[in-house]
Image 1 (tube, rainbow, N blue to C red):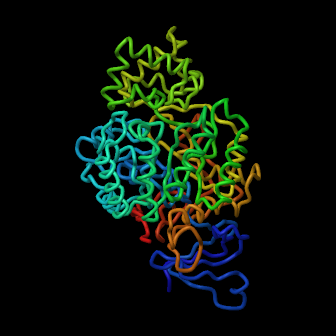
Image 2: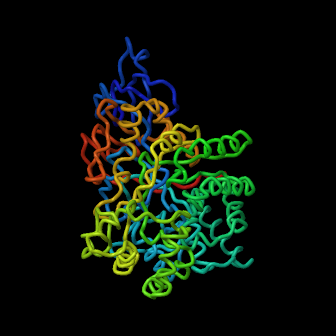
Image 3: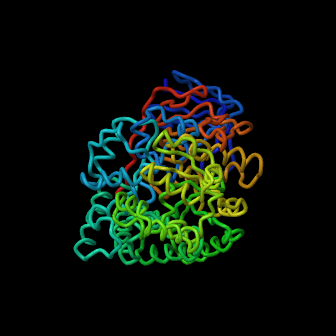
Length: 536
């Protein structure tokens, strides 16, 4: 007798093929048998220690979040319902060029400070690793869902070059290549960059190309947050496509949006660029979240020159009258490269979280709203927040366009990613709602995608990018990373007003055959582990 049989499920298997009705049998963490309805007629149905009646429910592979910022949350919060309740069974960490391995003591402290707004400072974490392999081993002690890791190029640069805006020396480039190779050998699936974040943004294309050559030779992929999503966005996408082709490295474009007023209605131009490259033989995928606003830190908007040298240097420039005035001019007049070359519109910048609880009055208001209440210029409010919160403030940036979101999610290279930052008292609802929003809003309500198309984009397509031989499909022999959801009711509970509400219509989620969501509630199971690069 097997562990579990899921009876009478409508199986959407992740391949894009039509749904079919079946009993699915699970044992020892794997799918051992799929008995389709026609085959079951007139014969004895499979039996198991436990049975789930899935009448009216869809059974699909677990969802793969191709862009997650749970690097510390998975260690801090064993519950992790923000992702488990959505049906996510695998997250890809190490995004946007900044994370916590590989590091030394100095770099670890610098990175913790730099991305406090993403993950918190980590006072509650024992940072008992320094290498990529050490971090993956830490995950293997038990986490809520599985996790893969991208080597963060900005962290590698901070370790070798520092936070200065200069080209790497030949010796430094050799060391960075070795660090990338070591991280891949230890299990990382690729390399990420944050090319509007320091210090990754200081890397020239030649440096990035050399690192990507290493990544490609190991069968990994390059995942850049490229140099602009605003003014010059198309040129920035083209730069990454050309760089990856030159390096012979697969390319996965992170949160592939076209934002700000300059890009309204321009998604077809991006998709045409990608189609030309794909038709010429390029290996390209992308991910998006199904919302229009973006989310980052307030400090990320600063110009690159103001961010050189690391967090302490940034704070010194913000407190100096002359440098603060220059920063303001770049933000409000010139268009900071940190703000994607577009002059900042303070009415679009909503404070979503602060590190200092004493600053809680700013959360939920735009910078302009808070400035008006105080009778001061928006820049003065923003500057005060940056200094008093020591760069830990997170923001929502309301600069997206719905027509672009829909056009990009229809593209043949599309996958899903939440880009979810879980910190702050009012985070972006995408952290809690991305995957049910795809299924409920864009499939059931709008019909932008069929259910079978959507599930494939959230399961088998990302599994193929990650080169996972036994995940992403409902197939015999595959790991039992599975989700059961009601296609009539599945929906994101999270809203901008209540961003931490859990979704509806997802009663069961299994990771390696163990329930992490059962009858709509989080169990205490921690079956997740690191998912490491499959050797060539």
